Length: 360
Length: 90
Image (cartoon, rainbow over all chains, first blue to last red):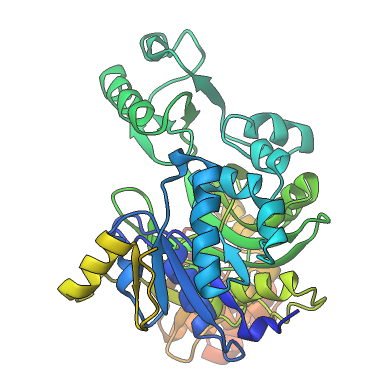
């Protein structure tokens, strides 16, 4: 097996919409800026306007791949073509919606020599929003009171159902809205169901501080590495725009308990609220790195590199002591794209700096 | 009322909790547990330092009284007032 330091690593989720960026470019940046990494990152994008396609500082070359809704066979065919041209050593999937396809392709990709540190389908489903309450009640982790919804009529009988406004309405994969009355709730429900499908999750609002933990599970029940962060500024969608590393033992204990219960394999993000009562309430578990993962590189606990080390069967992922007090502040900037590159993406589904013919 | 406020502040500001705080020479305080930061003036920094080094309010007041050369009861009420204010940030 080639040394991980020289791998060609494919990364997905390289869209960078300012209000809700995908994690892929941050993962790529963690890899290319790591002092030991001598390999390269290949961007896998879904849309010609995904910024990572043109960000050659982080993605040496990039390819369009079919949307997750096209299914695993279409994804496999496209990856086979890209693999034949590039020789991919590993893939780090970075979006929730594509993981089911990558899980289906685990053995096929392994057969091609492409490694992935991802959960099993069972692990993936157990942490999904619609199963989270069951999981948490089984292992003694507090969650805000929640209900799965397929009928928006619920919002007219909230009090009879034992809830009260404001409520959080969440899409099955992404997105959430705080609603203060039935009118707002039904509008949010329609929007979320239209975008992400049924069901929706409705949850009571818990007041407190929002804390996040990004980590990597080894598949044996151990949290091999983690970084904890508190959001200091958020976008309209509630995504972190600024944050700071913190040390919260209760959050660490909760995340360790979840990883142990799930025997989680791969990256994850645990989102919690530390209530004004001091108790940790689990909000959700995302089955991939968060978009703020570059902070892990900044505190010398580079978790994407830890994934590569684990895939290379290194026992020690070599993370330093977790230190609080390192801030990040996100900013948006324009990437300049020339017509030739844009044309290449639209016509060939490829953008990069060399001269291989990828039109096939 | 003041007693209950003080009791609440004391539970928020245990010795271990205060010892976690990173306090710079300029009085910039960073709480590694919550990620919050705030500033204290020179006297506040002195009281915080006394509280971090002491086992209780009386001992911290004793330390403050000696450092500032003020009567013990004045130092004690100052430490209590500071602690009630600090409890709002932790």
